[in-house]
Length: 271
Image (cartoon, rainbow, N blue to C red; front, side, top):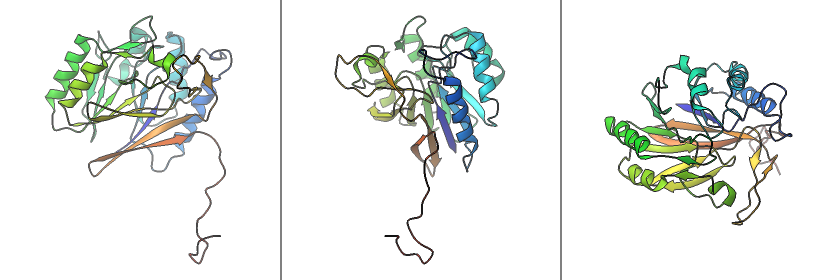
């Protein structure tokens, strides 16, 4: 199974720029074009939150129009820029969101079980896994302890060292880590929010953040560093499940020179 992960697309209404500078719609169109050129094609595309910028129905309509050329099924979880009920309505036809409550779900249709978590706290940049959400996760994981499982969530369950982002990080991450320790079937936790590629171990399981399809949070590990973003190369991730092993790759979006051969036609290394 091959899974493509997009995150932090921050789509705004047509013609609007994020932070007065970033054409997030054009960025996502470039990401869609890059995905459509892949060979082999992903079996599934997941989006790990901050799909839109202010959570309006109009923004979700713009998002869906940009994603429409993708032939794959889409699986999405909310981020702090999303609006729960507008998102529920926008993706209701997919059938995996519950009719009410948190946007949490389990999908058992693939070689990897897909579990989505809702870390959204309305009106706040930070996220939370409260007792209710964690209880749901504990029950859901206990249902199929032998099924290899992928968890999707927006806020990463670890401190990154990027101070201004950690201050709007995830509450409840210690309890989440304790829960993961009890469920070795969890293969990976895929997150967004940081607009960068970051890796950590949480409860003995690998957790990753994915680069944004648009702007990237500036890498500054000073505790009181100012918040800001850079127009570093945007990207997405590909997660390959094969022979019981999950391998994750980062792909930059853009036109770059190459590929060039290492060897000439005779098989000799090119000097």
